[in-house]
Image 1 (cartoon, helix red, strand yellow):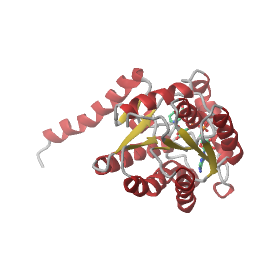
Image 2: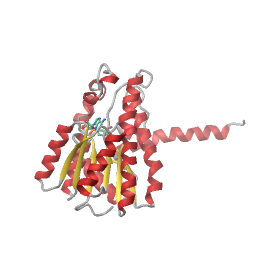
Image 3: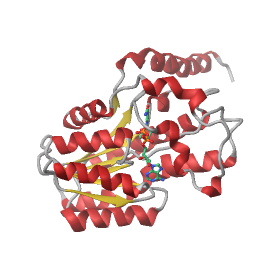
Image 4: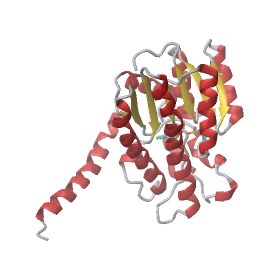
Length: 273
Ligand SMILES: NC(=O)c1ccc[n+]([C@@H]2O[C@H](COP(=O)([O-])OP(=O)(O)OC[C@H]3O[C@@H](n4cnc5c(N)ncnc54)[C@H](O)[C@@H]3O)[C@@H](O)[C@H]2O)c1
């Protein structure tokens, strides 16, 4: 997709952080923007400020864990604008700690938001985008953590983000023939409110003691500006870039991880079974 002016963008988790940064960047590119978030008031406030810049924009309160709600988001988008050209399945949450110390509730909450939320966005929008025809693009927000083990720090989170990488790779080639590109956004630290992700944790999942501050505190303070992430995404969509890495300095870490994967093949080649 090369031409953004007058096209329609939908951003889940658009009321804060990376989603807000993408929404603002898309509006600056001349797009009209649907700002979707579980936090309806904040989504409305971002949407109102986009309207002040001359963009058309609506806010839609959506919990991405709810398949029907995401379907309703697509309905509202098409009712208002008649199309969706750039859909960003970006809403996400985080818990800290190792996988083995994480509770069933931690696993369920994170997979429902970070993984099912992305699947719901794909399911709701792809059939409509195919029907509308023409160029379109979907960006799923994973993380550099989708390529790195979370260890003691982000065991559950990185498992969800690896899934988002896999989901993107599963969809991308099959929708290409319909003119729809798909990318996976894999940032490292970006300034946002992710550290307060528990604010949206439903009561049914309880609270995780400790929070994220002791684990991730410093990283967000020195993180990338979300508007810069928005610019990376615009550039990547124009280039139809499958993997959007915003922090090239993380390359060695990912290479180290894949070296470990390849070592498994070296080991296998030596076996006589
Ligand atoms: N900030 C970083 O350093 C970083 C790095 C890599 C990946 N990410 C990913 O970027 C995405 C955006 O996170 P962020 O850092 O901007 O955090 P953020 O908390 O500032 O924004 C996340 C948004 O998602 C919304 N949200 C939470 N649960 C939701 C739900 N069930 N339905 C709909 N919306 C919901 C929140 O209200 C919030 O507005 C997430 O997927 C996150 O995992 C962030």
